[in-house]
Amino acid sequence: MQSSEARFDADGDAVMQNVQQPVFEFVQAPRLTDWSQDAVVSWKKRWEQYVSIVRQRCTESGERLEVALRPVKTCVDPELLEVLCLYELRKAVDEVTSEELIDLREDDIDARVLKYYKDFATLYKENGLTKILGVGDPADGGRRCFETTCVAT
Image 1 (cartoon, one colour):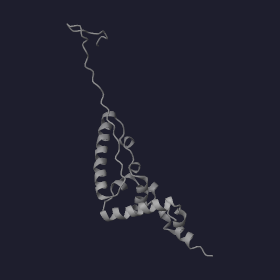
Image 2 (image 1 turned 90 degrees about the vertical axis):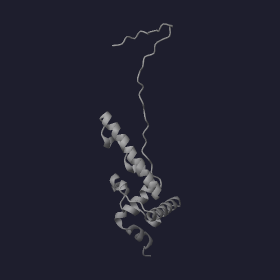
Image 3 (image 1 turned 30 degrees about the horizontal axis):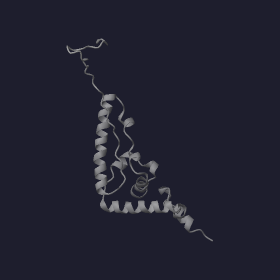
Image 4 (image 1 turned 60 degrees about the horizontal axis):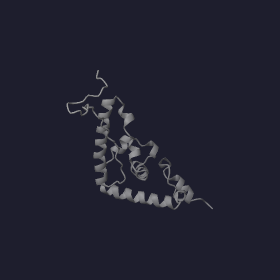
């Protein structure tokens, strides 16, 4: 055990003790904001790096990986997530798992179509057209939209 008394060298200068400084690294999950091929490939590489860093931290700290990792849904832009789930996976956002989002195959054609849907979704939300267009639960197969627009007079 070391004493807490200060030590001095021959010149009267204090002798500093070597103390290891903790190193903190801020680890942030990558964010996916675009569905272009470049963006998805880049995001997937950054996601794998993020998982690797968190896995290493978990082995050192004993923390569970499932608890330490951020869910994939929270790493995707909310509007993009809604469009992906609705038009690509044909499921509600709540039903989509992280594995389904990570395993998506990127395609330039899909990217263009999804960009169109995303822009369209933003447009009708901003203009209050959601009730008229009837976008919502994909399980009803568009029945609500049909019922709204084809009401018998």
